[in-house]
Amino acid sequence: MNMNLSLSLLVVDDDPLIHQSLKLAKPNQWKIYSAHEMSDVDWKRHYHAAFIDMHLNESVNQPTGLRVIEKLRETQMQLDITAMSGDLNQTLMESGLKSGAQRFLGKPLFADEVLSVLEKIEAHWHLRHLPTSHENSKFHWVGGTALSHELRQRLALLKGEAGSVLIQGETGTGKEVVARLLNSQEGSRPFVAVNMASLPESLFESEMFGHAKGAFTGADQNKIGLVEAAHGGDLFLDEIEALPLSQQAKLLRFIENGEVRRVGSQTATHVKTRIIAASNKNLEAMVREGSFREDLYFRLSSHKLFLPALRERLDDIQSLTEYFLANERPRRNKKFSPDGLQALKTYSWPGNVRELKRVCEQLSLITPLPLIRQQDVDGLLRPGNYGLAAKSSSGIAAEDLHLGLNTLVERFEKTILIDALSKYEKDIERVSQVLQVSRSNLYKKIKDHHIELEKL
Image 1 (cartoon, one colour):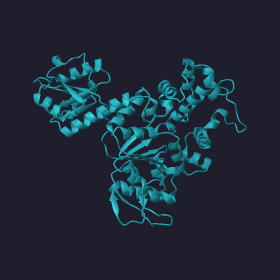
Image 2 (cartoon, rainbow, N blue to C red):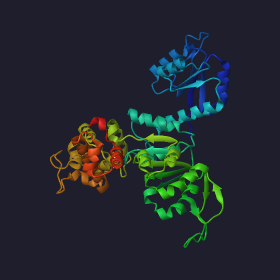
Image 3 (cartoon, helix red, strand yellow):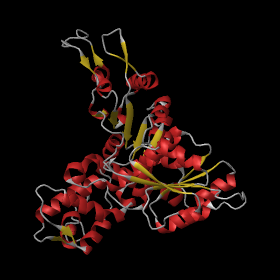
Image 4 (tube, helix red, strand yellow):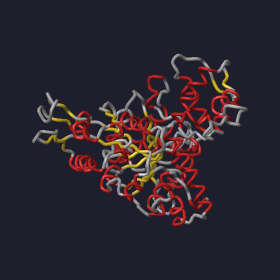
């Protein structure tokens, strides 16, 4: 993680032993700036993090550290602040958070905990300042909205955590990008990715866990599986919902005991691999339906991340377009005009960031000017009179055909569900009869399509 960067840590505490212990516990890239009281703080200096004691004098009733936190927050909005105290009074701890601290540590401090906090702060800093060159394009989360900032914080909190991670979000929201960021922030370690939907059920065990020579016809040599290939690193299982029930127990067994037994072998090998799973489906609904094992879901979701859809972070569109155009090869030196950006923001983006990337590539190629204007965007996304989309014989807008059959079917199904629920006043029993589906299946579809009944 260290990129030859010197990180500055402000420590404000009236106890000299705290300063000394933090100097011993910190990684080499951190430099400590010590202050024993509020007046010792150099307010003009930029800090990456701050550890602030709540009681900088003998008065327990006047936690001076709160004023230090508030002043630091006023001058350095991005500063990561940790409040400290031996007094674990709930009111005091909550006051520290309200004043602007990200966390509260109880004294005495433990070296492992301090090291973990500093590693997560460093990881968050790197996630915010990763270079955006073409070479790093697959490992960069672009955007400055509150949702993007929150996601980076969540990613940083997973620094050093060994439990499985479940990434959920719609198609095209960047689940593999996030998985690779999780992997890269742990340093140089293996990363193996597999799409579960493309893995035949009959080959699952051999591909995942390997096989011994002679295990079956055609097994003319020993072969390690994907799990073993990711030893010491991460195994990314995309579209985990596609894993058949018959194979889910085998994956669960590995997650629980870390042992791999190749097909045809009697010997088990212990493998240390973190599982990162991704899904664009509602796994909880699949558990209720019985198509996904509850115990596997709980094992996979030790840590959960939910990626926002592009329509929920429209203000990131400008940063994303600049990023895509800057990393295009060959470089065409184009950019969006203000009205072109606004046209992008009025589109629904069912394909999310992946679709935006494709649109940027197409517009960069076909637009005649260095500026990509509203009429250019409308011509691609809204063909025919800029907003009056041309219709096919099926009644589907021609602009949507590029989304593919599966996406179109999903959108059509959602429209039918909303119409039926609205017409019959959200009477689930009646709607299930009219649409000729079971109540449980109807509830599943409502969940899958993120339909909020209270808003209908």
